[in-house]
Length: 249
Image (cartoon, rainbow, N blue to C red; front, side):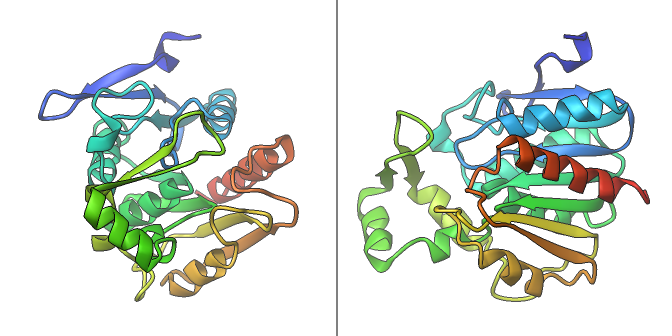
């Protein structure tokens, strides 16, 4: 593996180090934002990074604090903290135009980052994007439980250890909801979603599209696709979607 693609670390102001992989090349820089409790070693991130490297494109993979190879405790993370982790890495390593690719919670973060960096973000791809999941996936019973216990543990279909959601994360999510009004993003947006997604309802994709201010929004529904959209054909769709957004840039 060439030196520029090995894992490197960026210290935050508090000294905690954020892991990332960065390859220089033609811009805009493709930035992959992982989902909740995920990291940059996943199939989609790795395939997109390898494609970008082969095409001579700039790309940035990252792990939020407490995730993957980054330092910190997962339970200390919140949506706002992880948004700021991603922004710190983008500001340090990709100060020019960027194209954001966000998976699940990463799609929520991509929307927040695109709103915060309107002049810098030239395109956005959401893969089963899940904005506001602290709202629509939490029943009154779960809300009462997380307020009472400070955390909720759910079985994970992707790992042996349960998904942990802290009260701090839930409150941060509630403070950063997007779907109750216009999402002030004007760049081209592509939303990919599987119709067999058992975690994030596919109907959320057209709902996001309707809230976006951008006039250039396309929703692609994959008939037999699940939440991860990590099969070879799904990854081919992702790469083709990213390549299509890069063509006119």
